[in-house]
Length: 177
Image 1 (cartoon, one colour):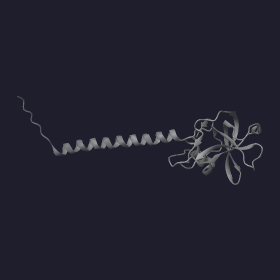
Image 2: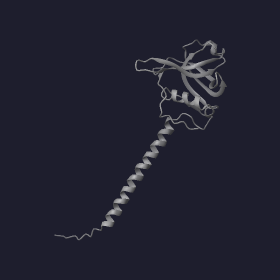
Image 3: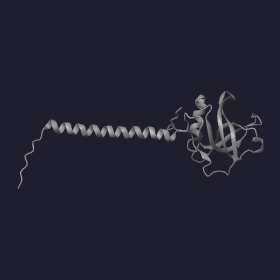
Image 4: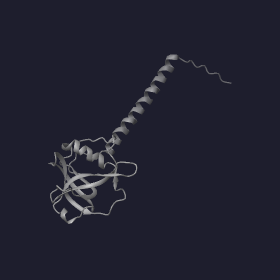
């Protein structure tokens, strides 16, 4: 039979407990910071690199649309690729249209047309309601006040997508410029 004599010091136990709690708190803080910044980076569709083309999907469409109207200068000169249907208003020029989506505004699928004012020299060949995928660059124009306009560099007709609807902007969108 062995007998062990262990001397336990109250200050030693406190120091060990304090170190363990500190390590746990720092670990949780590090994970939270990583997830916060990593999620923000993955959700953001505006980058500093204006030479790359940024793809807009239905999940972030209205967030980017809203932010581009509120902070036009952050978007000017940046290139985007996304899809929508052609919608024209009575006061547009022959080269202007809205690259539109239907935004669901109620639980019974009532919708509102939202979209980016766009300009394309050969748009006359396309009828309203035609679904297209475009690539273009944002510039600031005066249309009933300052507004972002997408200058289309390429346009191709596509089939109506399965995810044709977009939803109102939410507060989770974190733009970076």
